[in-house]
Length: 382
Image 1 (cartoon, helix red, strand yellow):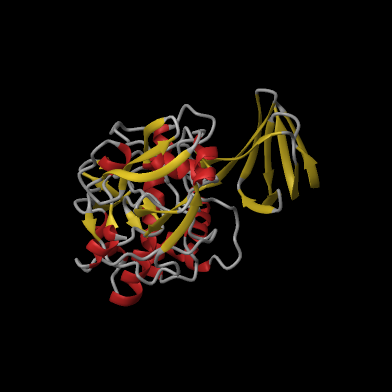
Image 2 (image 1 turned 90 degrees about the horizontal axis):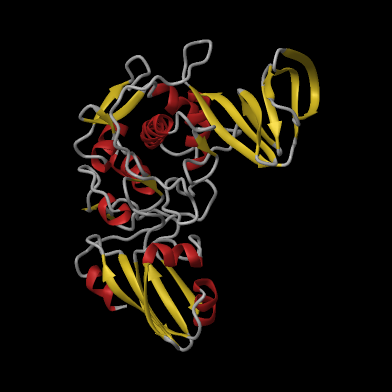
């Protein structure tokens, strides 16, 4: 591909990410989700919910739909003014709050905290009320391998904490703060072998990133492919510390480059376009990612945003918008680099900076969020 040939002459390194549940990226732009990470503007002081020990409680959507069975040892279930005690399995088919002595099990996953059941339409909404540090331990251990370098894990902990607090303040009037998916951050409850993640959360206790007097926008992704994208080019709104910059640190990513062959027939089906004949790049962004593609069809030519094209074809197949395009017969070949939107912290790059350069988590954060400052929470209203 000439595009990649030209870039290779500039000695830009383009590694990729491991296709694994450990590193599926949070904050990826997803056209199907109304929870895409738009830029946070408010700097007002907002009181956040606390538990009885004074810590912040996070409301995580675990399930929406039919009533499910929950397992817990020695629990209380309070519905209205009535509190019942029990142990074992219970089907939550009435509104109330289940509080286990230890953890509860839902759909084969273990969770700390309480579980609230409330009606939503014709079904049920289950929300986990969990202490922030337990939530963050789960996020760090699912977004990165808990066996990664401690400094990389600490960087992830600070990024995840800051991101969470921004979302909590945006969504105080909503029935939950975050869900369990990459629409927000991956949360999978208690994970075995999470000691590294738990230590990272504890050693960065209450630390968050600020820009001026406002919590920073701490987006992250798996692999930037050697160049970080700007918030402006991905979401259309500028953020002063999220700009295009060279970041050649993620070459150790297991998938250094990716290539995929996609038949025109599949593109036609996914885009609901009849008779696709070719796909070409119409426009690139400042980071050289594809901004717009031109689709030639039997009925004419149409342009489509590259992020919408990626969503339609699948974000696992088309791992990023950082690719070149070539036609081969009745198919198109995409040769790309990186995984995810490319804005903010590159997880594989953070790992490499810690492993290979001995960089501290503070230095890692300085690279990905230049102009921000690391501070501790003050009174939990930030």
